[in-house]
Length: 269
Image (cartoon, rainbow, N blue to C red):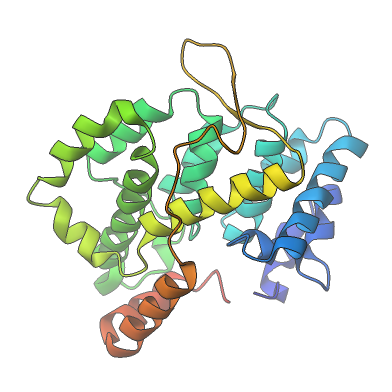
């Protein structure tokens, strides 16, 4: 996940957040939050940046307005740490634009968008239409495939997190019975819903260990303070198993290999 020369110009306007993109590549620890010490160090680094600097909105804009998922990760954690800044519209822009970290963005939006339930429902009802950042880079043959693939990832991510909201249970039950939803979930080989649930579980664990508070913005109510035990109890999936499954499928699926090469040109591993 090393930042390449192609990415360097995207780092010019992110100010002190550049610390996350040094030789130790701290941003990478935020992708799954599995490593306790390293991921918590990355979170504290962002917290210190927020504490030591004022008016970081231009730098946060530079992070979230990028087409690079690595920068989206750092921006999202910063926004979770600073509940005073509302960038939920830009997080949705990254989500709808095809950011590779749609599961993580879904969790960020769950906390930071006071209208999350309705905005999620609007997208689910339309099967998560996307307008990919990188559309112009795709060959014509892959255009529709890439859009459908990302829509499947986004739909699975939203369902995974919306299942943590009891008021959406009836809606989700009906949604899953729709003829076109099951094929979309099957096409999501990476199991983005499980990744989203796993990232949510790891996030609340890391924040609790650091005695940091997670605020969830809720529509027409006062801000809700969520501590580790306040969220729906999750059976956190084994992310490694999901990764292994995806690797197996990827090795056997030539179409998926070609799609990945075409669609992720701008985001090399």
